[in-house]
Length: 114
Image (tube, rainbow, N blue to C red; front, side, top):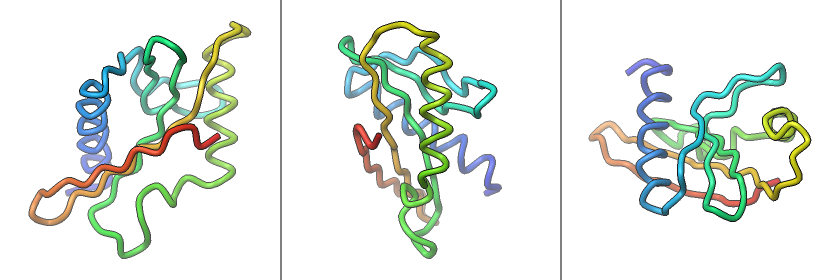
């Protein structure tokens, strides 16, 4: 499976997971001058900017470990761009998806990382 198709599959898994948690999906793959936000959703209280990281093994670490300070800064700037000065609560979350060679899925949801 290519990196791109693995990432797309991980985002689909993340969307299903979020819907089960009653998070309404507002946008997917929202592009800004600062980068792309994988998923923008809301739980009715705040807007959630969600980065999805997907891997097929933990050989190089857990998927969420690929979200570094620089990536978080890009997501924060993109979130502020999206909100366009609106005074609303928001947080940045990360969903880590691991899909092994047998197709088994492991999801970790880390809320409010920034």
